Length: 444
Image (cartoon, one colour):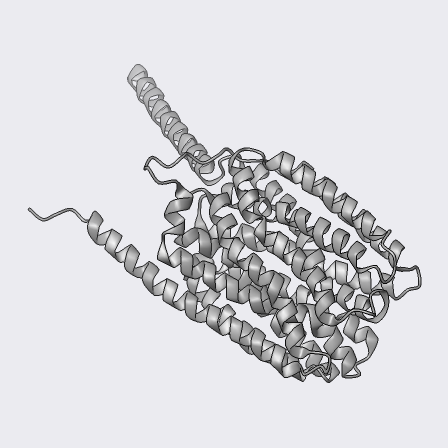
C-alpha cells in the first residue's frame, strides 16, 4: 500500500512537472512571438527611436521659431515665402528620402545609415552656427539641405524599427505613438530653448551651437539603445512586396491622403508666431505658442494610439484628420492671447493624433511585410507636399498678410485627406470581406 501511494505521488509529481514545462514552453513561445528580439530590446529600441525622432521632428516642428527670427533679424531682406523654402526643403528631404532609407533598411544597412545621418545632422548644425547674417545661401545649404538630408535618413528607420519589434497591431500602434510623442516633446524643448536663447543676447551662433550639442548627445544615446531586428522573409510570389503595395488601391488612396494632409499641416507651424506678433500679442506668450502645440500633441499621440486595439486605426485617423481641418480655422482667432492658447492646444492635439496614426494605417492597408519600403514609398508623395505646402501658404498670405487665404488653403487640404481616407476604408473593408468569402470551405 505504501509503495502504491509512493508510485501515485511520483506519477502525479511527474504529470505536474510535465504540465509546468508545457506552460513554460508556451509562455516562452508566446514571448518570442510577441517580441522577436526580446521585450527589453524591443522597448529599448522604441525609446531609442523616440530620441531620433526627438531630434528630427523637434527640429522641423520648431522651425517656426527660426522663421520668425530669420524674417525679423537674420534674413530680414528676404520674404516670408523665401524663408519658408528653408523649412520646406527640410520637410521635403525628411520624406523624399523615405525610399532610399527604406531600401537601405531592408538591405541591412540600418545602423551605418543612422550613424552617418547622426554625424551629418550635428555637422550641419555646427555649420549653420558659422553662417553670416544676410547670407541666404549659407543658411539654406546648412539648415535646409544638410539638416534635411540627415532628417530624411532618420525618419523611416525611426518609424520602422519599433514596428519590427512587435507582432500585434495594438503594440505597434502604441510603439509608434511613443516614438512620435518623442518628436513632439523634442519640438517643445527645441522651441522653448531656441526662443529663449535667440532672445537672450548670446547671439545666433551660440544659440545654434547649444542646440547642436543637445542633438549630438541625444543621437549618441539613441544609437546605443536601438537593436536592429532580423529582416523579413522575401515574398514567395513573382511580384516584390513593394510592387504589390503600389498596385493596391487602398494603399494608393492613403498615400494621397498623406499628401494633402502634409500640404496643409506646416502652414500653422511655420507662421503662427508671425501671425500672433503681427496682431500685437505679447512676445513671451507668442514664443510659447509652438511649445503648446507640440506638448498637446504628445498626449494625443499616446492616447489615440493606445485606443487602436479597441476601435482600429481607420476611425480615429479619419476623425482626427477632419478635426484637424476644423482646428486650422481657429488660427484666425489668434489675435487675442486666449485665442492663441486655445488654437495651439486644439491644433496640436489634432495634428499629433493624425500623423502618429498614419504609419500604422499604411502598414494595415499594404499587402506587404516589408515595412521599410512600404513606409518609404508612402511618405514620398508627402515629400512633394512638404516642400510646396509652406511656400504656397506663405505666398497666399503675401506681403499684405491676408491671412484667411492661407488658413482656408490649409483647412481644405485636411478635408480632402479625410475624404480620401473614408474611401480607402470602404474599399479596404470590401477587400477583407471578399478575401474572407474566398477562404470559406465550399459546401459539398
